[in-house]
Amino acid sequence: KKHKRTARGISMESVAFTTEMAVVVGALAFTVFLFVSEIIRVDLAAILVLVLIGILSYIPGLENVADVTHLFDGFASNAVISIIAVMIVGAGLDKTGIMNKVAAQILKHGGTTEGRVMPIVSGTVGFISSFLQNVGAAALFLPVVSRISARTGIPLSRLLMPMGFCAIL
Image (tube, rainbow, N blue to C red; front, side):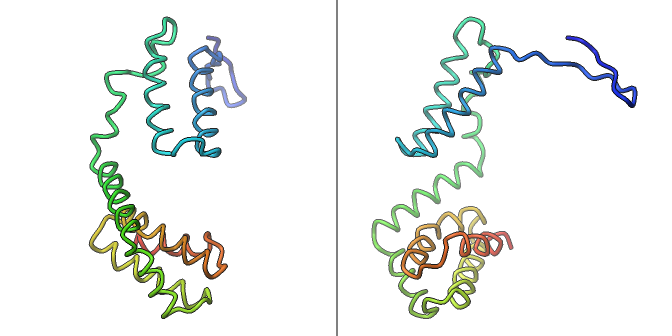
């Protein structure tokens, strides 16, 4: 490692691109590819990459890619577990058809215009987020908003942004 002098006289270290860095960049590229292509479900892709990084850490020369004793520590977070639980509950509600009925009620009262649908969706998510975590409320309403977007032709992004902001409030 060499020290360089900058115009302000601050010493900066130059960093060499290592094999471990290349493995991490490759793992990131592989993860993005799996997420974008959706060859396998996104949740399975995330766990696959996590396990792959753990396995790569046992290869000689790549021991510092990840600390395998702390590989799954993220699952100890209450936020991660609650989001997983909300997604499971949301998928269950979606399979029962309740979310279709919610979407139908929103469309019944709001019509197909963005100016009427957006306040209903945002207000409903805002109300639900007063009882659930904000990310959980937004995740619960993703299938509803997706259906409303498909039925009305309103771009999904135009409904998701206000919904997300109201979930935070």
